[in-house]
Image 1: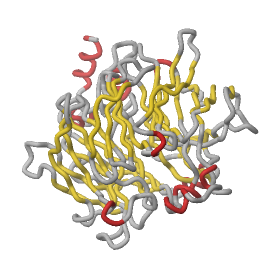
Image 2: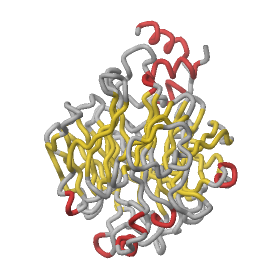
Image 3: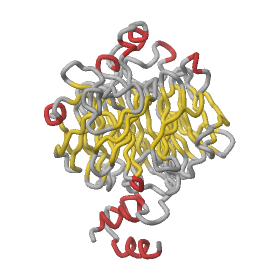
Image 4: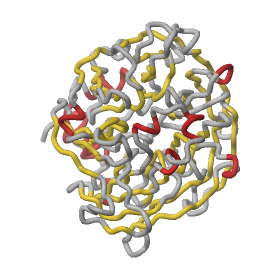
Length: 448
């Protein structure tokens, strides 16, 4: 048995209790940081008139024992503005894949060789051609030896019809899995009005052989000025209204659910008896539960409001706690993060809220839930303007009752750009995985 396979068994809890680790938005196949993270890698949009104006991977030292705590220690520009957006690790966490929603370029960074100073390992320039016309690589999701990439658009009409695209960890194209539509359900069962073919995020529940994907909008909309789009009645018709449940192993769609209002991030429960995932709808400000019922059938239902839906606070990123008891929900328009008690997933209850800034988008939590990091940028043409165009990385400590700010990095002041998604790095992770200590891993496997 290879070290990689044994690591995967230990980390995903195959046949055992799962490893409880936040970073809970990560794939269960990814090696987890179970202690203090050393670095946060921020995939950052280049901004006109700011520094070199290029997209870049920014590394911030976040270990409180370090003399550089809370400081930028590295910045690696990739050339041009590609609409930097999401990123994620390969299953061994050696490489970070990051995409551009505009140019459809994919940048693969070597993280493990020197966690303090990532290197650009490879650039994929032919994603659209290889995939058969998919545009806008969004979520990067690790499967064993594979990277599953959700697309947001296509090169025929730049609308929302799109697919998931599969690559090897080495960056070689494998397959394109098109989203089900009314004209081509691809074997899926349509449960409501919609089978729109839109896509956004994807998450897996390996124990149930399930993938869950959500839906957003196409290039025509996400590259348009936000105010202009809101006043364009035709543009506002072109948002996704579906969640799809897939067979994980075959990558075939099984059920298409109506989830009106553009369901964005998907976060799945970690406990081996909790067979459900959450998503939130950007345009209707709802929390939805995607769950397996007592008969083993997958269902979808609205379970809570987020703020005042009539004011459309625009829910964006969400994060589930490692014990499946708390869901953090960020709302972009009012710059607020909210905590919901999800002990009963069918009846979430808001228990806390705090204004983080004039605008807030992404949230990333440490594995123990005690440290929450926030960034500000949504999309280059959707961010607020003027004094409300704050661009930051902020760290808060959560004591179970309140969030207390520890540090903030002003990305405009540092001439870096617009910070979007965050991922964590730690020397401890690479000591245990990269230096290959198979005896220790086998011993841990046998103890379980």
